[in-house]
Length: 325
Image 1 (cartoon, rainbow, N blue to C red):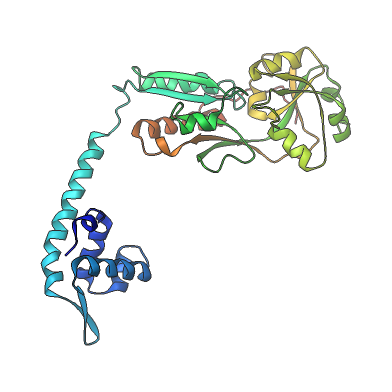
Image 2 (image 1 turned 180 degrees about the horizontal axis):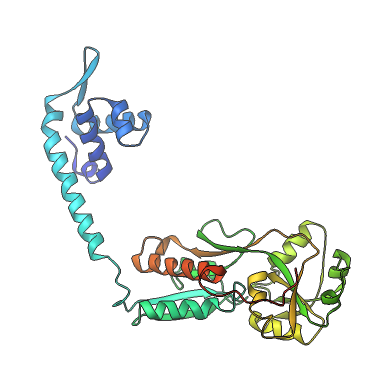
């Protein structure tokens, strides 16, 4: 039988393989039952034979038969699996998340590129369902290293848009949006049908501040991939203030239609099509393995997903009647 140091390395799945192989009396059938492969189960059976010092299954004519040792292990293995199931089921019940009573601190880093209503709507939803919870909102800025903060557990979730989100993080797509331009009512693009790519690139543009030194936003990444450049004359750290700048100047903002649509009934601005063909702008929530299975953070991600879905047109009336495509 197994020595102490070998015994300490036996994982629960190996016990399940033992029970299944003995019950099925076939490596191939055991592999199907375990949703595994025959080579993997064969390797695990070899390890079990080494641990027990017994062949466990032997050839009996055209079939396989369990040895007396294997039969003696069947009931203890079943009992161990049942007790493990009760143990972890009880743990899962103990870990069930109750929003109404939780005092969890939810830490979210987000840009307001998605929608100026996104964070207010999210906070309202969280406080309605979890009134005792605390919410800490962190802006995405060049001083904030969101990847390090997620890995260190300093934030639970990051919401924003990337052409290629970091591969080491979990990702949930929230919504996609058409790329358009926001301009003042008296901007030439709002009056002219001759709104060409050349005229667009020649305009003065306003863009959000870089997230870190040398960073290129998704709009300029796409332009660069096509060999195009635009003139950015204003960079703003506060994205929500950009529509006010656009309304009082000849600046052009290029971003998602959903963001722009919130302002066309509030300011002397309008939406015009972008003469450069862009792919849809995609927004995501990102999180680290640290919080992947945590009940409170799973609930938080569900709330973020629902708010993004509702703001996309299902829950709130869409404004923007003065927009021109």
